[in-house]
Length: 266
Image 1: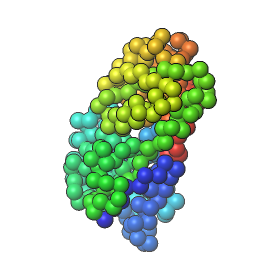
Image 2: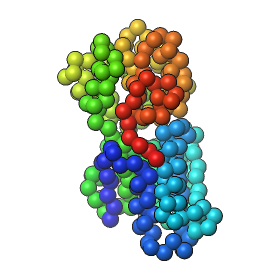
Image 3: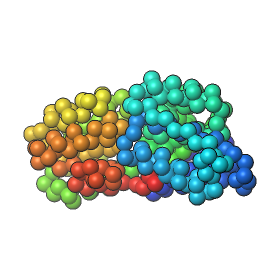
Image 4: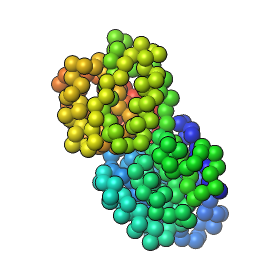
């Protein structure tokens, strides 16, 4: 019935527009949309706002013909599961899961209510959909997977002498695992190496970043939710140690990264 789209250039708000249009041409009838994110940070907030703005553009206004619900799990997967169960009980027309953990919680909770995921790097690897093709399930969405070779080219351009690239990430986050695996394959082919630092919680980001000081020439950040939530801590370490940060989301440039190559989330 539904399909996952692997298109890094498609703004995620366009997904919401398609979702709105799927309700039918009659915008007089009230619809219910429930949205949940694993945590609040600029990239995920932009995805949420893009969904709401696109719904408005399609003629759906909160309080009139749209019932809008939003809840953040505040970085807690247990809370994400609780939110999923609550939303299922509310029986909305569509549920939107922002980031892999929230999307996974929704998929585990219902096989009938339509689920739309966003800011998910590898929906197949995260077991949200069985393939990149139409799955015949109640799940659809847009992947934010980026071409990592282009990311590496950016690093080499911005930091010409870089040889060792550091990455702080949560090893328990499926998105980050995909990125790390691919970087390990690509970096050596481009004359670089990867130095990893684990941050299972957002409070671990600072110490993980400090462990890279003296070992790396630059730090690359993907949209790991722990890292992006604590980006200021990473920026402080980078500034203190004069290690440039290269990001995969443009919002992180506003927070201290020196460059980014990413997609539009709104």
